[in-house]
Length: 340
Image: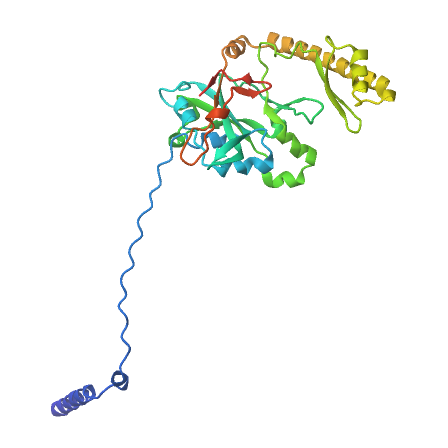
């Protein structure tokens, strides 16, 4: 039995040896050699600058009064508000304070790469006050006949706490500088379901503020006239300086008012004067009552309130806005105390 197994092994070895000497048909024909490819160079890693602690603050403030269809135009340029950030950081004018921030836009003709172009410039207003400067919104424009003062919530707006990037895991109470931004929860995708009048209201919104001192126009005696003719008569009438008869005769002489419209025009002007006097009287009474009802601490805060207005700083990829800067904020806040 052992001898038989040896023969089998010898036979198997001989068969293997004979098989290995045979030529493989595929090998005889020859296989195409693969071209040697050079290894692809590894792409250089792309590095992004670390975001600044307050870099997104200006974007967090809703640009109130900007038409919905124009909001995206704000991002046409990579605007930079490092001046706002420095004012709120340690050593800055607003560091350690409670600040309320809102945004807006100002269309201006600027030089962009050698061409004149209308640019929607974002601006930011910071209000230095320990209490919210107001919880109301004013709705007003040249196109609207009447001014509306409504609660912020009626326009889905409110003061929202803002937490800097490096402090996002911290509690608001622990922050040295407390920042609140004006936010709006109205979804743009839902605008198509709203009435046109409601949508347009957002275009005419502006932050409301009632200063302790009366506005400059509180004793104004001028009324704006828009008499419905074709074309309409648009003019100003001063009830202290202008005489009704002389004023109307002048319009007839200038051929803007037909002779047979004189009495109607006179009645129209008188009614506008009565309305304006009534508005001024109500405004004075409302101001006096509001000031009398103020909490002493709130009254003191309002006496020391400060407004700071910020424009974007000049960078390599943004147009220069230094020549169009102005302290004016809106008809309620009037002028900023400082441009920073």
